[in-house]
Length: 263
Image (cartoon, rainbow, N blue to C red; front, side):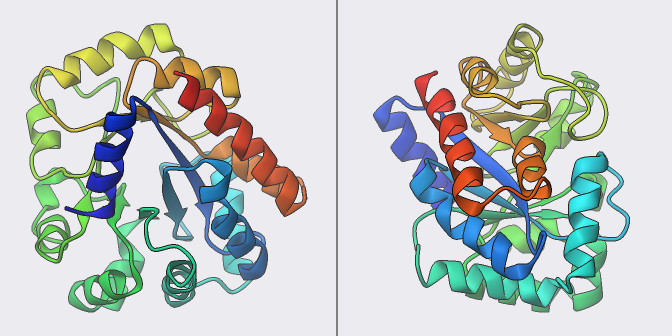
């Protein structure tokens, strides 16, 4: 059992849906991003996705791309991202952290070394968007053997033939991408998402968390209402990009969490 498994078990017992956030490590600076990170649990966040900045973020829209570039310009690295999680764990040993990003920085570090470091600092799961199931031997299977969840994405184009392959070796939860396209590009619709979640639930007992295009407390409530929870990323990253104070960012996060938890 990972912290992710424990969190979903607790939420289920409480009759609550999960609220998940995404922020980019090091955006706009190590200090500011850590201030936001450590404030997320008190703002109502159940699971934290922490972005690992990368130079070629192919799945991300302009908001996340620019966040990654700001982080890289400020000197953020994989090493510093691991250190950020280590510092967070000194304050919070219960909130799950999922590292989300691309395979290149992990490959460059070396898979065995990365997994040992990730486990040591307190990372609970990975979302690596450019490693398809056909490459599970690269990272997915070693990660699970090391005790980390490997979380996969499904999309509106993941048909019945492809879905079993996507679900194979996935653990922790399944991240359902509510729209076709890049992050931050459109608004999610609960009416569109509900039948897709039901279709996937027929094939798995994993919790299904819906992200992409959730920007308001009302949308968080609507989307969480048809799934096991929701993710908000770009809307929070936008607040950071606009230069809002940590307090204002966390206040916005709290409003989103309250929406998701009303579902």
